[in-house]
Image 1 (cartoon, one colour):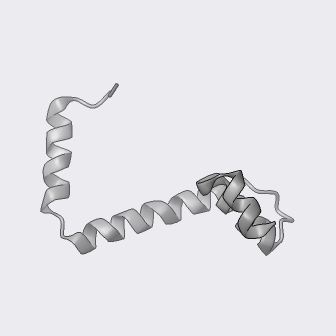
Image 2 (cartoon, one colour; image 1 turned 180 degrees about the horizontal axis):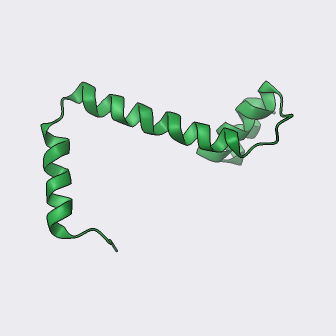
Length: 71
């Protein structure tokens, strides 16, 4: 299911194809950093660094990995 018109999707695909690998990688990194900021902004203000890292890991990779990585 998609809500994007075929013409818009084709235009977007062309724009991505015109980007260099470095530009695409930078865009992906920026998107990941934005996602991290969104998750971090949803955490309680008093969360310490370990709690913040565990929460990020849990949200991105699941409880099982977070538990193994951070206890």
